[in-house]
Image 1: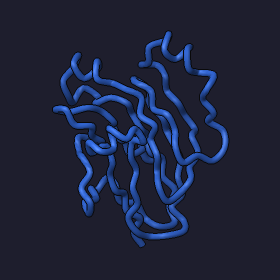
Image 2 (image 1 turned 90 degrees about the vertical axis):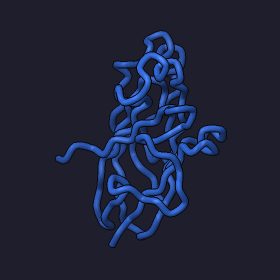
Image 3 (image 1 turned 45 degrees about the vertical axis):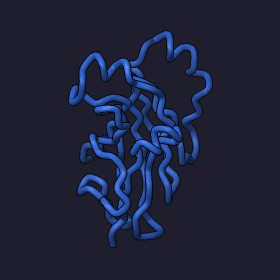
Image 4 (image 1 turned 30 degrees about the vertical axis):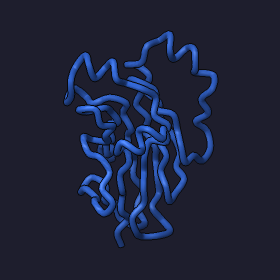
Length: 147
């Protein structure tokens, strides 16, 4: 199995970004292109993986309700090893990972793997943070399903 595509949600130079990129209406990066009739694993990470501002970046971590348009997916792994244990213990009972999803909460330090099948339609779709302020500041991107 190929390693999952990784999507880092973080703050960079006062912008909320995904993999260092903000939203542009028609832009789709190579790592956001998928083939119709395929199944992929995507890993969402709350943090910059050491690419950003170090301690300042860690202080800027906030929860991100991540929403993917155009399909439903299943969560199959939620890695909390880099989360603050007290924070996790205060919210863990509210998480439901079973069943089909279109949105999930990505807490600071958390990594979530989802499996998605791109079966029905080609075209461009949006994925984004559902925090309105983050979305408005660019934490939204296109992915494209190609024939």
